[in-house]
Length: 160
Image 1 (cartoon, rainbow, N blue to C red):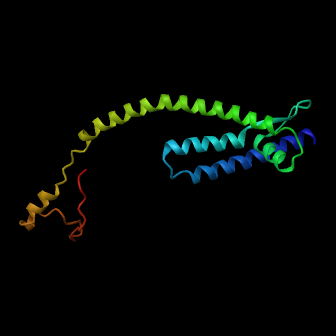
Image 2 (tube, helix red, strand yellow):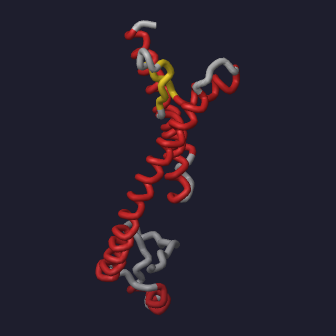
Image 3 (cartoon, one colour):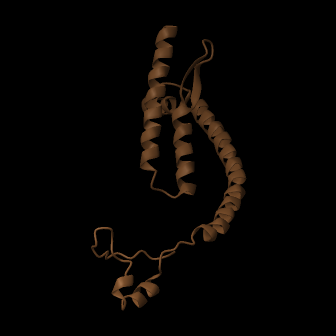
């Protein structure tokens, strides 16, 4: 395998791995954030972790592929090295993620508290409440449930 073939194989793998990661992100999009983020991180570590195959030539390969091929065909002795690389990179990635979460959590709580204080000031609208609309029902000239075409609006939005 020449150097160009090696780089071409890594480029093809990188594109395929990013495609798989994108599909995984779409599949986990509906989940709760504190479950979704570790699962995405785990798949990213599994797909993007390299391990050395030939130390003399400094050739690397995806660790998950080396592990799978060594266990499936029982041809090499690189499976333990690949599993060790996966566990080290996974431990580092999850430690960084936990550090990021430890920084993000108080900032988000502060921001939500600030947004919660700002909302009552902004929610003062001039729309009548349902009770006011029902009270005006006796006076047809003051009915605000008519749209621009003169038709009656049937939906009344509740005030939150």
